[in-house]
Image (cartoon, rainbow, N blue to C red; front, top):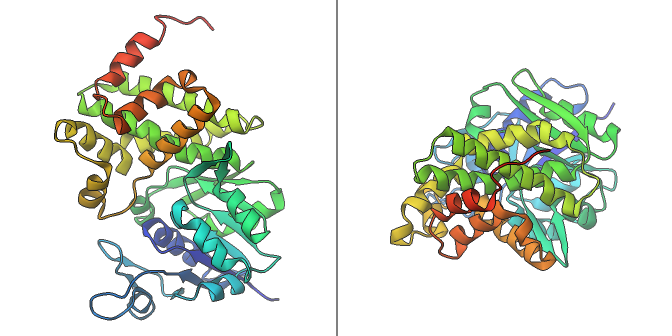
Length: 355
């Protein structure tokens, strides 16, 4: 019986960690070929060698700091067309802002029988609608696409700390092979019907993490942090329902909802950078400078998502319904003082609510 082939599109930190998870899981699989192909798009190193060469010969992804040890059955390739053409299962793990260009180059090579899954946490607002990664992939490639998301901090997964994730699907039979690819003793998978909630929750929680970071810079305690998180998850779900009315409340209770929110608001780059942004407000610290100095040039997803949310709410004239999201936008992009966050939450929220 022919075994299915798997390709991973992306070679960043999360892509590399998840690539190692999949490579470990397929090593002795009866269903999948033991060789995982990872697409790498990187300039040559100063030594003249390529990142793909380092992965294939020394099993090190030297594009990451520190370099990451890769499993021997994970093979790097700079040939996107070959990665696409050979795959029965495609795992998209590149930043969402690069997705459109990748899909354009892949679309004529992908098998009509292939299945895809997106690990991307982001969306765009275009022509009055939210454009999710799964929709982009399905439209461009003409194949079904699932979504994966949850409290999945890359270095903790790499250290085999116990973790859980959510896979969203439209057809139940499509979920099982991806559950087998990702699930193991330390990385648990729960599959739930629907792809939209996994993606919107995964993107919007980064905005709430910005709010917690701003608040931490003001020296608040756990009570205020909890208020911001509670208000944040309420607006996350309300925003999702604006564009996807059929999304179930169940998504909030899964790892992609409350689980991911807790992780992002207690650790992670959006939290750290937002705190630094607020502390450096008087010196006019920028998001771009924080990406350079704190993230080695990696993109910060929270501010990008916040811009898209503001654009969407402005178009729909519903900014007043999302008090937290809007005050965070004012602080992040319009020069408002971080203290405005607490002022707005104190004065714009009623003294009591009876439900």
